[in-house]
Structure formats: C-alpha cells, structure tokens
Image (cartoon, rainbow, N blue to C red):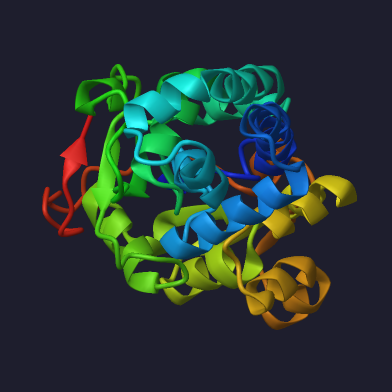
Length: 301
C-alpha cells in the first residue's frame, strides 16, 4: 500500500469514552449554575444538536433553552463567562480521557518510516478535529487531515480565540462531501497522487467507511475494535446525539452489516495492519500530478 487513509474517531482513539464523560461533567456544573435538572439540560443540548446536524456543535450549551431563559438578552460573551466553570469541567475531563489506542503511535511511526502517505479523513468539523489532533500529537504521524469546515456561530470570545495554533494541516472538504460518497475517497487518492487500488482505508463504520472505500476501488480494513463501547456511555450518547433512529440502528447492528458489506480485512487491534499489508512509498512512475483544487476545497493550517 502506498497511501493509508484513516478515519479518526473510534479508529485512532475512543471518541465515545472521552466525549460522553466530558459532556456529563459539563452538564452537571451547568445545570447547577442554570438551576435546571441535568435531564432537562441534556434534552436542550440534543435539540441544539438536531438543529445543527452535529453532536459536537461547538458551544452548543450557549444556545440551549435553559440558557436563553436564565440569561435572556445577554451576549454570547457574557453567557460564556457565566458558564466558564462548565466549559472548564468539559475540558478537564477531555484532557484526562482523550488518548490514542495503545498501539496506534508505534504502528503509525513504523508505517511512516516506509514513506507511505498517511492522512486522516473525518466528518468531524475542522475546528473539532484540529483541537483533537493537537492534543494527541498526531502532527508527528499524519501529513494532513481531510475534514469539513465548521459553519456556525463564531467563537464567543471572538474570531481570534476560535483559531488554534498550527498543529496539523487541515484540508477542508466542501460541506456536501459526506461518507459514504466514494468520490471523496477517490479525490483524496488523486490529491495524494496514488491510484485508488494502492490505497488502504481504515475505519470503524461498515456502512460509511468500508462501503465508501470499496466503491472507490480501495482496500478496506474494518476497525472492529472501534465498535466496542461501554453500553452506558453509548446510551447517553444516543440521548445527546443528532442521529435519527435509522442511524442509531445502523451503528448498533455491525454484525448484520459485516455480512452485507464485506471488508477486505477485519482488525481487532490497530497494530494488526502490519500483519495484513505491506506499506511503501509510491514509485515515481505511479505518481500522478497533485492538484490543489481536486477536492474543490480549501487547505488551512
């Protein structure tokens, strides 16, 4: 393989195991500050997530009905200051729980040493994934991450505070570029200058990651290990999420999907990639002209 394209959440780290506890901590503090029940506040957050189609909508708490009622006619800056202890609680728990799976770092460094391209691809918005990549030190392992741009309210402390120090290149995808559209994967391969047949896509979602890669003519490895979540955390996530019932059912029925959408390889640990594939730099004769606009997207750092 001459290019390794990696889904991020639940492929390189357990997103559920850090995100849900962080939201729990934020809700506990915020509910006390707003004088509402935690259950009511979680319901408010889900409404905001539905409205934006994004369970990780930045500063969703500021748009909840509870905040509108408790802090009416106040600016987002004032609301942010009032709720700062809640946001701090979220960040502290995230810092404690956000970790790469144990075998990711060594495996990626070994593959990178071969000269193989390694990039990330995610549906998480650019602001969210940039923050995670920086916290996890992924700039030492990935040459770039392909992600959609966040479109929504500005950072409550101003545009400059919403930007983050350069850690990894984010190659911004258009908002319509969503999995499992195989054209996304094909165009990532084109931008890397590697034919699809020489690309390996790794992801935890059969109906999105694996199906997309196979339709794009790539090898597809299913990160089955990334589908194993604490049942209690998963139930809390579903109650917070913007997902429709069909999406939830699809996420919970991976066994059925594995018969219908067959990956080339099933992984029970990330390090198993090296047991199944050989990685190398693309030969000069194989490389195609890389065009900066092949994704009709911007590139930001």
